[in-house]
Image (cartoon, rainbow, N blue to C red):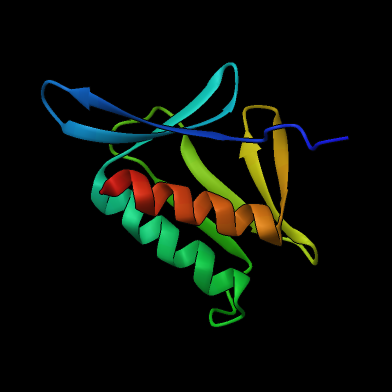
Length: 106
């Protein structure tokens, strides 16, 4: 049995802000990042995953989203807040999220 898809990455273009990297964590929860924000977040996720950074939480107030990225480090991965709930990603999925964001930047 395959794992459910916990996130989707897509690219959109805003007529004012230009290219945006979109992270969809639920049907109703989409975060829009500028390429610079996506790059910073991707590096931060990899640093936490690899143990290079001792941070226990990654917070980013996004310029193009009404919501913020709030990721709390757990023993097995990261819990990303979304509205009233959270999406739990294991370390492999955290790496996939970081890689897909980096790829979407181009």
